[in-house]
Amino acid sequence: MTSRAQPRGRRFGTWRRIAGAVQALLVLGLPFVRVGGESALRLDVPAGRLHAFGAAFAIDEAFVVLAATLLVTAGFLLVTLLYGRVWCGWSCPQTLLGDLTAWVAPAAGRSRPWRRAAGLAWAALLSSLFAAATLWYFVPPAEFLARLRAGALGPVLSGSWAVLGALLFLDLALVRQTFCKTVCPYAKLQGVLFDRSTLVVAYDARRAADCVDCGACVRVCPTGIDIRHGLQAECIACAACVDACQPIMARLRRPPDLIAYFHGEPGAPRRLIRPGTLALGAATLASLALLLAVVATRAAVGLTALAEPGFPPRRTADGRVLNAYAVSLENHRQGPVAVALALVPVDGGGEVALRPDRVALAPGERRQLRVLAVARDVAPGRRPARLEAEVRDGERLLERRSAELPLVAPEAR
Image (cartoon, rainbow, N blue to C red; front, side, top):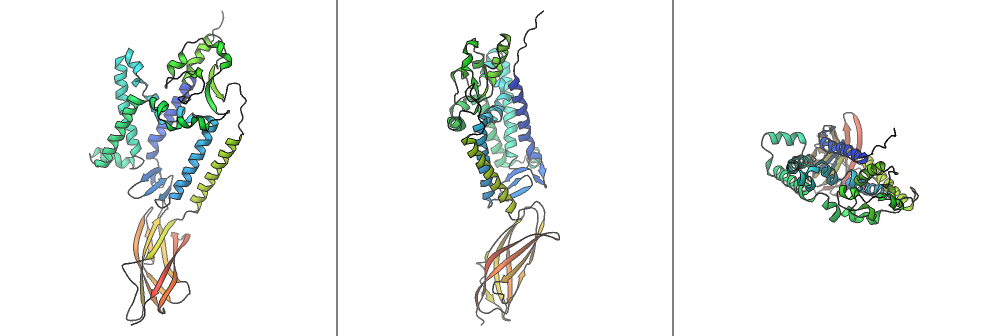
């Protein structure tokens, strides 16, 4: 009795669904993770702060976001050059949510109408869930859910949820992978980013005689292309055609990889080290170094100070000089700090006391206050001074900050 080769199918499809489930859980669960008492990743729009894995970045620290953007861009280009459209087939929300709502596809509706109706209901549920998850990156999910239970989401949150959910549902119900093959900008950049060693899904034309023209690869393609016609911008590298072809090759007792992942043209040698990978690898490492340097050197407390325009300098009857300053302090840490303030004339002349001279800041707190400087034995005129701030966590000195300010002493009357 002879053994029969068993078809190999849905190998990549199974792994793609596992990868999609893991990524979906990550997107849905990350807002619930708290680091240092705050969301692991959240943009607090009213406060103008980005909370990212235990660190808080103010709106005036846009250079941190710029450095992170450079890193993500360079890394994304490097991954594309090496592994092609792995993002499109394995991580893009358009693809992953399309896989989760396969019953919406019209082909299923022609044979079993109830499946399309069930698919639309499932798509509506997923659209509502992922629209809410998007908002959780701006509003803590615990607050969102509490306000939802109380019926107090408000017009902004409820309106945003409705609009996002509706757009996502219409995309899943009507557009789906049509977006990938028509207006997706990443698809249009494919020809620019790829080279002869990029990983792609391809048809091995050297084995054209093995193809029985069954059309299975075309029927399962979500964008409706024929992979046998060569690399096309519409291909999202999902490998559905690979999974469809391999069982047929197995039944015919032919080598399985008629359609497969190849580094460039089938049969061409793979070159990992090439000018493009070296250049983008260097750019990625440089962007990473820049981001680490920016984060490592950022101040624990942001300090800005200006002369208070509504309080002109004055001299009291007993000869003391009064100056007022508008001081802004922002705690960038996830823990409370205490800031000790002192004003020191650059020329060393005079004795200056500040009121207040100590400020306590809660985690992430931003405080704007008027600081009054009272100086004695100061000659008339304008002289430079330095506002010095010592930042402490309990007894531990975290850093010293300073800002240049004028100390103005009017003429005695």
